[in-house]
Image (cartoon, rainbow, N blue to C red; front, side):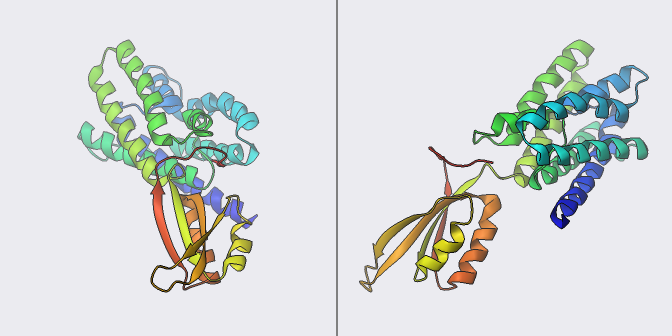
Length: 273
């Protein structure tokens, strides 16, 4: 329970960052974000519909679909994010922090990327096409920010064509690109690493490592200089889980030699979620 409360608080802070990006940078210059928020902005710009209400309403079908595909915990946190973002959008005044549209699209994109990234980092999302992107990357090692930028870019190009204002469309594309890059810097579960661990505490190390959802391979090695035989453990994990594995290694055998290398790709039965 304390963990889910902490994650909810992080998501609420992320929602505040997204709302700041919208109301202080994008909306004053009539720039667009991507996906559901972009559609909500278009409706808000050309009708009397309220942005915060439309953002919440348009997310409902995607949240329902995600409930059955991505699991309850993910969607519950996503609901918290959507509700908090809608509330902050309605609460914060629309006021331009920067008068330059280019600066606004960059810094607005950074804030939206930070808010979205921390939501993914704790196991949720900000709703909208984040859910579609999560479904798409669930069993594939694609950076989710890149996937979302591609989907959002298509929506912005369509909006530019329909609105016949390519300045807004192109500036919005910059914002979406920045959002995707910031998101990929924070949300790094697609980055895999391989650990080679040479230890004298093989059994104790295995006992702790095998409690985690990753396989471990034991390889017999022999030191070329000392001629002493030792065991080397090899495991592949994500950047998220690397901190926990380092803690296990230090607690079990502080003198263990560990080589950590980034993994280009993984084939076979590797759990990605």
